[in-house]
Image (tube, rainbow, N blue to C red):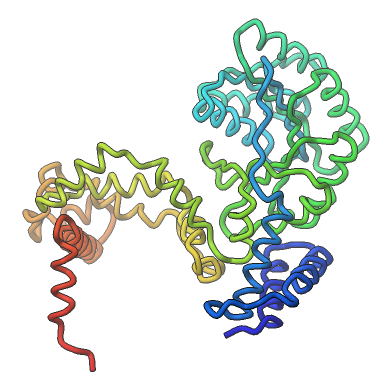
Length: 422
């Protein structure tokens, strides 16, 4: 069992592993130690557990305590997107448009304000098509301020109640860039100015955030690429340095891979405690109650088939990359950190199921040796893989049947009747 000193050492290590600046990590752990001194330890918890709880609560408060909503009042509401080239500004702009359209019922307009990067306008148009949002652009114009003004007027005339302006970035901060983005901001007087930063750039992200804030006095930060191994220490350091709320995090490449920033969940992530709440929310987004009821009936009648199995796989894939999902489970973050988890793990399963006839999918019991050989050839796999999948599917079906209805009691009865392991 950890002592307070050992737990504090573990907390500091977790912060550094998450790419929190070492000065911020030291200041933070000193504050936690001071708060812990003299506190009574409940009999239910150890001194080490108390230290981790204090660290968690302090982290949550340092990152704002609670989520901070976008200011989307005004018509049209103007949101200015700023950041360096490669930080994910353009993709985030499309994600935000999709989020505001689907979650808030708004009618967004995307604005192509990057006049320098080759194909920047085309990229935004492609993304706009994917999220079914109009994109305003002036391909011949070289005046970002004029484009932004005209876009806001266009939005007013066409009934768009939110305007998202994607601006130009550079590979590094320069005076021309800062003057330009400041002029755009002055011209359109946005309700929200969001600074987008790549969380994988670590401490460089913090320096960039400070420079942008000194010139723009932005309203909030967006952390992109917060998936896979990235634990989000930049979130704590940026908040500490610029004292501006983090409003969104990008958690994958798909256009629905955007989450509102919750400080408590990020504290869990930084300390390696997982993020089970976000995992459940992602699952709920893909959950169809009517489909679930139908599936339950099929399981109860032992009619669960390969079509149903394939449907469940597709729902899991919509939730995000597998490594990121597993990392959200408490205690699993460290376990998968150094593992190479292949996002294409389901490909061979999908190929095998796709090579089955409709009759075989509906009734797996009919699959004899010749059918299995044909399926292996059609899916580009071997017969051992096909046999393994069919056996695993059969095992899954038995467990599902056992757990449906009164099945849980049956399972308990079976466990009680098993021979003792003594």
